[in-house]
Image 1 (cartoon, helix red, strand yellow):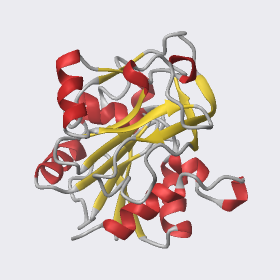
Image 2 (cartoon, one colour):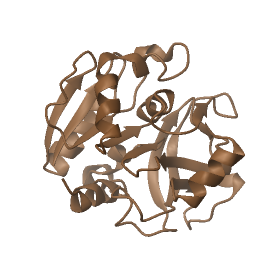
Image 3 (tube, helix red, strand yellow):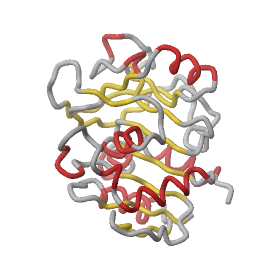
Length: 230
């Protein structure tokens, strides 16, 4: 596969993502500057974590208007695969490519720690090869990670298996006490109706290298690569 990792002013996880995809997963990767309009024939576009444009206005709001996003929207509308992590998830929501929004954490503080999440569906290439209900330990680092959507939207998303991950404990138990930021229904990641756009707040690229002592995130990248069909 050929991956494109978009770089915005303020991105700080772009090199982490490039390293995992290129060095760990051994895939072709190109960085894409946010002012570019050429996606260079990539099979999947990744919006990495960070603080695009300093998180002024709402996180991801300014980045959603960057020139490259117009091309990314066309790419996604044609079925192209797109992944947004943390700030990238915020950009996807601000762009209307994913339903819902990300609000300030309920404790109004920046949270940075290891957190368990559990897959909720196998209906996407991102989660097809992970077990529903298993606990994955994936780091979080965000100040605006509280996912919210209205009840009618959530109902449609549930019915269409658009909930990718929920926050849980090490046993995979989903309860309010294991929710780090107040996200509605413990949601940590979602997909669109077409199952080609994925967004999540936790950072799988930060737990994909054996040198870090945790490779739970690698399972998600492995799943994408094994199940990708051009």
